[in-house]
Length: 521
Ligand code: ADP
Image (cartoon, rainbow, N blue to C red):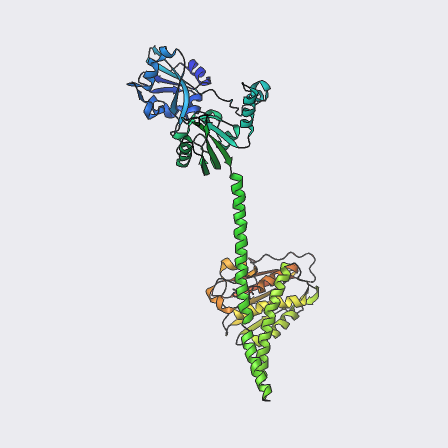
């Protein structure tokens, strides 16, 4: 609409300005108007000016908004008119408007100059402004000492405060409120609260205008910045000396931090609950497991007692069976004690030079009674496999792997035990042809209380502690334990332990890719 020179001047003007043609279509708006109205130059150009005018003001005394104001110019003699205009997206904003018109070569031009109602200074990020705001002349508001004190309280309160009149337009707010809204004072002052979209806030504002207190808690999205903040807001009416409502005040608290500490507390609480649940489940399982050997044991003892009383000959199988149940009971109790020692960091190991091949053989011999119809293949190097370790604890690890292999595979299948030397390490593998372990549970097997969620497994019993204890023992020897398995196709457990001769061994990676140790067939 204007020549380029003019345009530059208008662009730089601090007051928002909108220019229209004679048909009241927008030709131009300067950056200050863009900021105030939330419309961009691009969006608004060519649109009727009425888009900026609330419905109820579009036609006044048979004139359009602009024509009415133009007609009143003389009577107003330059005084601006305080009216509501629509910001982009709907909220109403109270502004002061002056209009002017001129006739040029291209027809009529209407200039609409807008101004925000006079308010507290709006310090932005402009360094010059910040410097000025530090000067006493700028911060000292006019008025009495009492007024100044109130002003200081208002500005420095550690909560967002805003004050609105009966229209209800925001007439004042502090910087804290501006920060919570992520907006600017320029945008917030003059905002008509009844034009906000948020139903909960509207209800609060209506309550306040009817003289009641109100409270809002929840997410609030600022219409001027789009920022979403969890807030807690108390609303109260401002009553004059006659008890009439003169507006309201809102106190806003940003509860983002509280929310995140609440979320953290909830998370910890859920974790603790889960730990308690796991422990409860474990206690139930453990009680059942401990009870299982007791009934047959007491039956056998009773029968033994009867026979002795009657001076009948005692069947040694009876005694052997009784002893087996006792051994089972002792093993369960030992596992429980070991697990709690590990938890307390008190499982003692006694290291000494040891022959791993001899330990494997001892464990196999001890297992002889339990192997039933299982075949056990054992292959090992000719020479002794020397390591440094705790013989008692290592035998416990080997025995646990053998027991599991027997327990989780069919009676007539084969268990293959292989001892080998790989670089600085002794590598023991125990492979079965049993039910196998789902891939996603292969890591968890070594956790405390873990029993695979494999339906078939439930009937096998066990406390889910053996592998937990084994991992602790193996890792404290500088070794590693891991499993490779496919469901239904058996499982192979590997234990790698540093050789006595090794200087500074680094345990091999689980799942060795190229020279993956294969069980001997
Ligand atoms: P448990 O006393 O329950 O056997 P472990 O810690 O020794 O405790 O084993 C943990 C879980 O790992 C077992 O409950 C079982 O689900 C699974 N598991 C262990 N060894 C094998 C195996 N050879 N084949 C299949 N699953 C196994």
